[in-house]
Image (cartoon, rainbow, N blue to C red; front, top):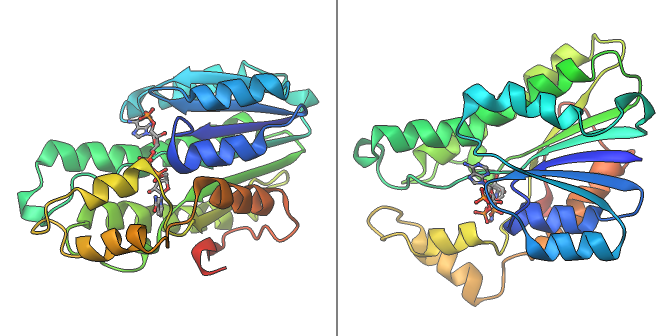
Length: 250
Ligand SMILES: NC(=O)c1ccc[n+]([C@@H]2O[C@H](COP(=O)([O-])OP(=O)(O)OC[C@H]3O[C@@H](n4cnc5c(N)ncnc54)[C@H](OP(=O)(O)O)[C@@H]3O)[C@@H](O)[C@H]2O)c1
């Protein structure tokens, strides 16, 4: 049995990834504040073991306990592979940085950067001596490399996540039973987050029209297609420790 921990699988890209991973030989452990009914039904039909853990990732002082409870859900010594996808993320606050409320900036960085860092560290700690395939994908964005007006929190969090990925890869190269890790920009996907982006006032996000156009011209990738690409990469021999890849370019 392979075990997959996925954050933010209640909707959007995370749901798309989880749906693609549904398989009788897979155990999905999904972490978010709400649950996907479609995923529950699909997993039930395909006899895929699914655990939904309700957790608010802004509660970063509770992530160690979260990881402990996740690793109590299965027998690690019998696992054929353990995988983590740090997918959950938020876009708000959007707007010039001086206008963004401090508590929203703090919340954003907790969800988009600190939580995936702590969850990754917990994953490494709790699988330290286990000699199976251990892989992590951090869901990043093109915004990690390109500054956008109004997205200072988002760009900063994703750039931090990319660098964290590279640091972990450097550390893991020296380990006996290493964890492999990659950062993946998934492309522009048709999710509730894109809807939020299209509804932000233009003075807060000057690129808004471009994002409305992506939707109107059918340029958004479906969560199913993006999920399939991520599943393929996660399980493939092409998985390259420490690399940042942009699936939107494929
Ligand atoms: N959509 C795009 O075009 C695009 C492009 C590049 C990168 N990305 C990245 O892809 C990832 C998924 O984005 P998406 O577009 O699918 O976003 P989305 O539709 O808004 O879904 C976000 C997911 O994150 C979870 N989440 C948000 N805040 C949370 C919290 N405090 N605690 C626990 N879970 C939380 C949500 O679950 P609950 O609400 O149930 O908690 C939901 O499952 C993000 O990291 C995003 O930055 C998206």
